Image (cartoon, rainbow, N blue to C red):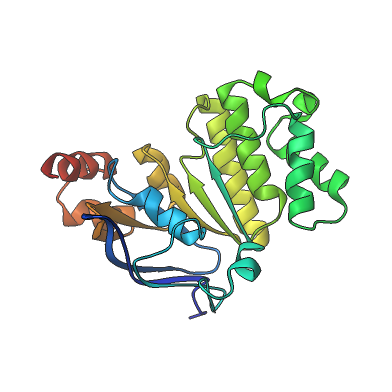
Length: 242
């Protein structure tokens, strides 16, 4: 078995008297999509923030590509990207200008060709000169995803990447992610409150509750363990118990 592309050991984050993430361990294999599931307040966002080096863990370790994030942050993050419905790009720039800024920050070459390629994939070629403040919420979501795949990362952290999208575009985005994973071996950590989407996209799932991992495995293994018909029923059961 190949070495994990991401390995988290005994990760913990405390904010004052509150423990947001409580001694969790997991890994992601090359080319794997790992679903991170849990109700609001379960610790998903804090976990992703620690993986991105935005929040310092209270305890534990994070290794990517065999390197310790604490000591090789810049080298690691050069190969990582992130997309979330809840982030925004500079509103005064056009869509294309925002992508140029990202490409320059990552030291990319052949930028114009790559931007053309990505805009075609997210079906936003006709909006490239539109000022970002005038984009719809769905277009902003697609811009965030375009930014994330533009740099051809080896691992991608996606926080509800299809929220605000209509069903047709959401389906196309999921198909695009599968295509990128197949063609490049991309690894993905994926969060969503759409249980059918989680079942479709995830090779494995870890379920967080109150900062702890309470279940992990394939969607089928988790539903069988809790005696439910699907992930949505498992989610409702655990969320109401918490």
